[in-house]
Length: 347
Image (cartoon, rainbow, N blue to C red; front, side):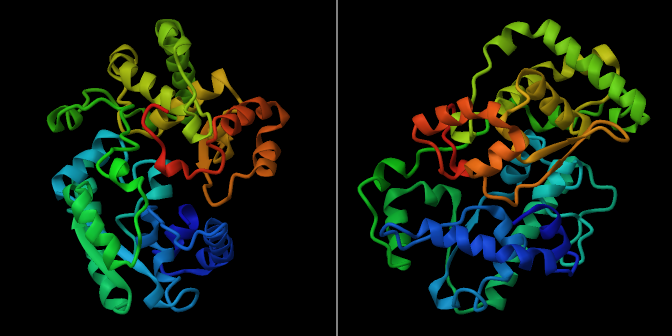
């Protein structure tokens, strides 16, 4: 429920997102089979689109519970900046995050906002959306908390009680145990992240020059980081993709690449492309290419479509039968069908 349909919704056109609702309802209902009664959605696209479509039309407000999870604004903004997810900067961020210019927005970032200010605006905008959502759908059961409280077992028990849920014995060991820690990017200071490069932006190069520079960077990484490449491991909780390991290698090499090729790579579109091209150079049937489609005109770039359910038929159709051994490993490890947004760190 993200990408172009979500962006169109935030520009006042909900047709594409509405067309996805039957698929979303199918996914919700499938998850509530075999005695399960509760569906829990943790995708942040909810408050940016389809969360406004589902009450009453598909599910009565009184059957919906919404947790409004807050965190220190600066901590959240830094977290986005650290993993290079800056709203509007890249095709990937435009797939998942709000556009600062969207007509549905309740706020605007400062004029000429830098990367951190855009991240901070985004967090504040989501907080405003939470308030707006409560006023629009007052009969939903709401529960507000912060990140620290959500890691407190006693507090979470109270939350379960509010929603009429009976926790299983797994809750005590799960609560407070971080998942999806996203350690691929280093924990640089805010000052280091915002340091302005003395070099021109790589994205401003003409298409042919940009492709040439991309190939040079890929060759440089393969020559100088061969040991790290050999140690790359698939993340089976994410479908067996090597893309996360590729992120880590690009993160390690980025400052070196900038100095060697004298271009600014950090936070750029080419940075994201380089990660996928490194992944592709190792395995063209990588799971990430179910969602990331490669184009070569006017220059190499990727478009993302996460609005599909990656079943066996879809994956084989897109990646081919050579993807089957990797799929069998995911199935063998008991990770097939799990929600990859809940992936375990280092799994």
